[in-house]
Length: 133
Image (cartoon, rainbow, N blue to C red; front, side, top):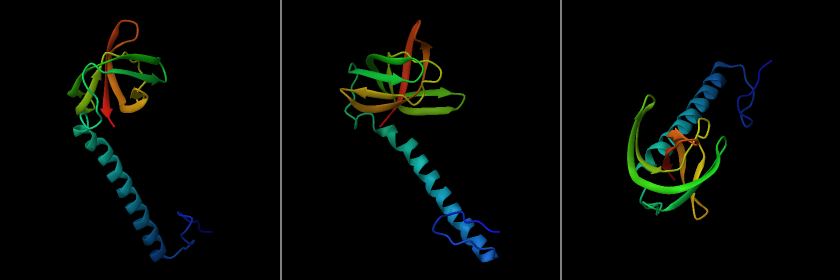
């Protein structure tokens, strides 16, 4: 019995059919990797394109810490972590907790960034960093 990797692809047990499936899967993977790479490299220059400015009132709704608001404290920030160096970030005085990564940063109801991390916590305060969108 053979199975299909793609709904539009007919099931086949021939080597040619397997090569076609591998090529299609490889192209799909390459396309996904290309989109991910673009999504994480393009925002570096977008801090000013989003209209975000230092002192602007912003909020995030995070999974662990909930809703918190504060101000943009810097633009085009670079941070280095064990996971790498990140540039073009928005820094705020909004607290965040472990598990909040991915929370949207909003200004006047418009999403302007995505949380990638922070320092401190919501008990003592801290800074949070966002990739501009």
